[in-house]
Image 1 (tube, helix red, strand yellow):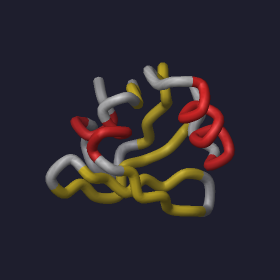
Image 2 (tube, helix red, strand yellow):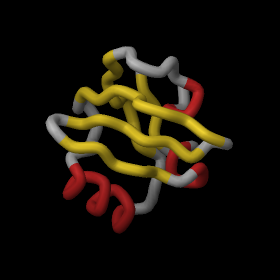
Image 3 (cartoon, one colour):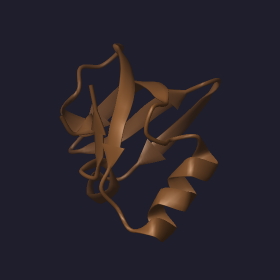
Image 4 (cartoon, helix red, strand yellow):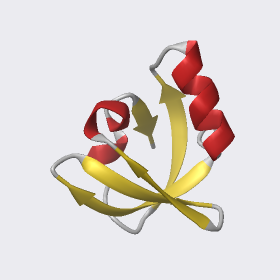
Length: 70
């Protein structure tokens, strides 16, 4: 499921990222890559905040639609 549809506060694992290489590299630098663990902190109109490791990252709706979790 896309990350914006995930339940809030549940530990999730990134299964795939459907984006171009430049965007994938950017997400990797932020710590978001296939196999990484994160949790959804909040969601508003598709824009989300995720907690990954000890930090929080805001992601817009367009990018959130490209990140799939389980």
